[in-house]
Image (cartoon, rainbow, N blue to C red; front, side):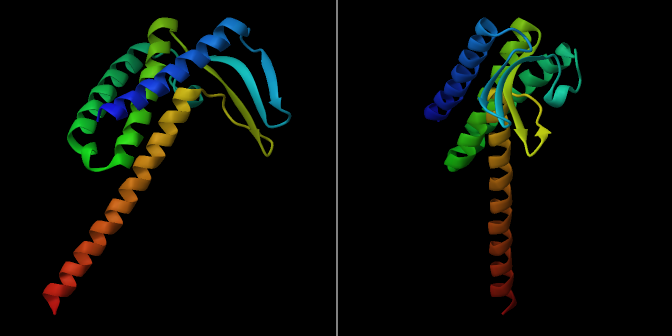
Length: 164
C-alpha cells in the first residue's frame, strides 16, 4: 500500500509544482500557445468546483474534501489491497483532491492552466489535480463495471450448476 501513497504524493507534487510555476511566471489571463488552435497554457483562477460551479463556497469545499480524503484512505486500507488497479485509481483521486484542497486552503482559489480547444469547443480550463481526479474516477467506474460483469457471470454459472 505504501507505493500507492507515493503515487498520490507524486500527483500532488507535480500538481503543486506546475501551479507554482504558473502563479510565479504568468499573469492571470495570460495565454501561451503550445499547439495552435488546440492547446494553450492559460493562467486562470477558480473559486468554485469543476466548470466554476459553487463559486466562493470554500467552507463547503473544506468539509467535503476532508471527508473525501478520510474516506479514500479508509477505502484504500480496507478494500484496495486486492486490486492494484483500484489502488492506483484511488491514489490518483487522493492526490488530486489534496492538490486542489491545498489551493483552496492557501490561495482561496484553485489555479487552473491547461486550456484545450477541441473541434471548436473551448473546454473549461483545468489543472493536473483535476486530470488525476478524472482519470481516477474513470478507472473506478471501469473497475466497477468489470467487477459487476464478473459477479453476474459467476452468479449465472452457479444458477446453471444448481439448476441442472
